[in-house]
Image (cartoon, rainbow, N blue to C red; front, side, top):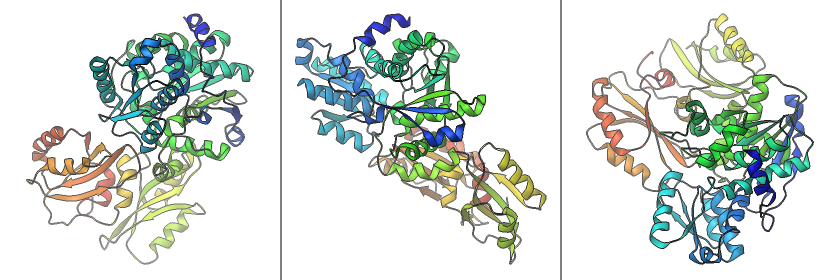
Length: 508
């Protein structure tokens, strides 16, 4: 299997536009992880992503008649920029269909290279469907972002360069969306370095390869998270999966917080800012080291891209310390009397407090929302909670509570009135574009009164709401039907502990 791609990769035409990117050692991270950590810097390409390789290699093989018809592609951004640059270089007309949730920096980059950007749908799948309509209506040539042998071969030149630049490695970590980069790199490296472990890394909320491997066949995710928009694909490619399942050792998933932490790691070692998908492979590398306990190994992660909106950095920085397991978010109940705060701070010792939220709620006890620095690994947090409990404090760990991190931390200080009717609470996700919030509010209608509402723009593709509605538990089935009609993903958070502790009624 890999042999059939080796010649394709060796013959791939990419260097008319792409660069041979360096492999840099991450010195700070190497010392911290007790391994030799290397970064393949595909963020240094002219379009700040590896996608240029596959796009150009595919377009270089079009016939004159196909070039005359023009090309069309569907992309969340990086493949789009690769197509736009390749088309500009070749003098070919290009139309790129991009999800409406695509970061503006990627839309502008496509248009600045002379391609036509059409915004359609909220995900890659919606954009791809519209692109196929253009193929049928106008006879344009569709350039697939990953599921094409010439695209895979173009991406495989990344693996060819790694082999040329480095002695044999113990493991290579590759980000996965549709699988083009992983298939190309795995095909080449498996043939040349058969003992090197090849590990794909996916976002937890877009793990289409993991799903396919578990089922033994390609399957489609019902929902795809868009934080790592460059890897937001619901189904692994047909050709890519055929290659991957014979060449890849394992797949690891990474959370949003872990990707944020990896972005910081890359910045500290290189002073460059990777996009979430660009830092995904490094997040997987760190989990692999933590899980296996390996040391003194040669480990390489591909930094696949650096196209992210500046506004997203605020959100990324907020989640970084939790992703690195260096910050914990906890709820602590303390007596409501003078001196309690000082006594609690003394109980924490010399730990750094990163966040402290409180508001008076009753005469007996106070619940405070605390962020505190801990040592990675989990044992330090467990010891802290045990120590606080031994001193008589009631504690709850909210570090993995998404509602607490997204909303409650900004809302602490407002429990609902004791005489208020029963409240139902939902967390809702919607595409971050003009009119989306209005669509939600209009869809809710006027039957129920909104008793709580929190929304904060994080500069991401999707916005998030925490909403309280004056509706009883018996009315939630009807309320759920309305939310289903609106069409945004939602979660019932009425029983969420963070909500009950800080925003619910009375002493929960």
